[in-house]
Image (cartoon, rainbow, N blue to C red; front, side):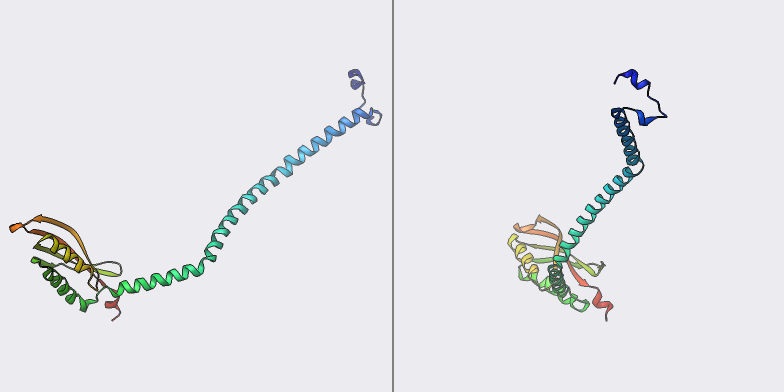
Length: 195
């Protein structure tokens, strides 16, 4: 078949065309139909499929995280119970309103037992916080270096929580030292509102 023979083909009588030309035309028409089908229908389905696959991956990862949490639920519950017990223990270390005066006496006696001399012991106003109140105490004491260590150690061993803040140490008279600090003790507020 020559190129000139292709020009002589009659479009109204396709049945008389040579088999090779008919096969080529059928392939071209099938390719166009497949291309149109992909463009008009399949392309959107492929995009939808990719979106669904991404969503599946996201949901699978979310499921695995939740499954890991669910698998550790008993451990989380046990940890929560331990935290509640620890919190309860800490709350018992916070004095109620009636115990604050006794705690102030304990702080001053701890200093005196360590050999310190108080120049200033001034409880300041109570500062309310979320569920507790802070009671700061301004201190100025004189003594020897080791006596300060014994005092701080004694405060740490008190049955109630006492913390030391804003410590400033300076040389004092007769070879001693002067320490200025703020001791803070804490009180649980809910006890007051529950009475």
